[in-house]
Image (cartoon, rainbow, N blue to C red; front, side, top):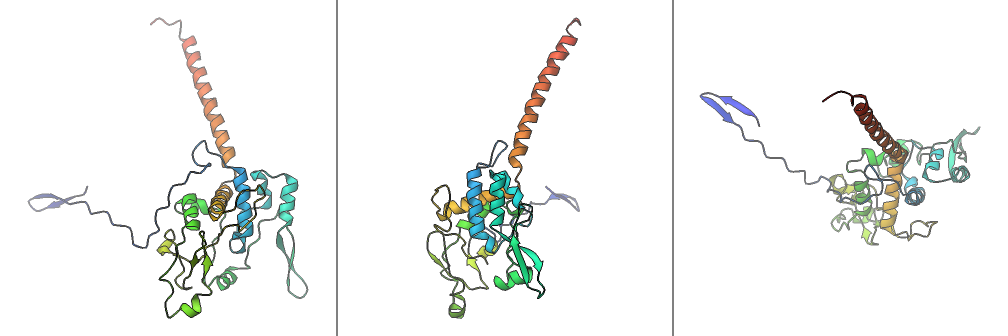
Length: 277
């Protein structure tokens, strides 16, 4: 509390009332029960693999993972042969031919995941002026982390008031998409799509997920909510692929220190046992 001196005494200044959050501030994302949270958490590798399927089948058309190499995917439970086969399913740039055309080749485990666009200008041209962010560390740098990523993916609302008479003809067709519940979302390009978890409650990204958008190899039902949960788990794993190893190492260190402390206590008592109290 701030004390302001005044003539004839000191007046205690009242603490200013805490400013209310802006009306367009993102809504607080509900807390989800993630297996990888907490000091004893761990990643569900089956969910990580399903999340990769969602990323490759849906997200990779716009978003990149520039800080990830295909060899890193061995950490999600794949053998070297499976990693090589997975890498070979992608195409990466291999320079230009004599006519200046970009050549491609099958990726190898040593390659980084390719970018969906050549540069930022190409990304803007394909996304009405917006540049889709790189997702390599999205759950670490995005306020709210995995909870907000999941909320954003599943939080689209029907934007009944987003199409006006001035833009209904030009923007409705290009801005329509299907949400998690199958409802239609329409929005003007300059307004974006209604989502309470986005900044300004609008996002340039149309609803990306729908039921049966991908086919899960393990037979899990690919609902939009399941896809959102799995791809969020995958992105959390990508952001910190060695988290489980660090947790195991941390537990081992703590157990070792506890054992060492007990050993030192016993040693101290034995050394000083001959000293009269």
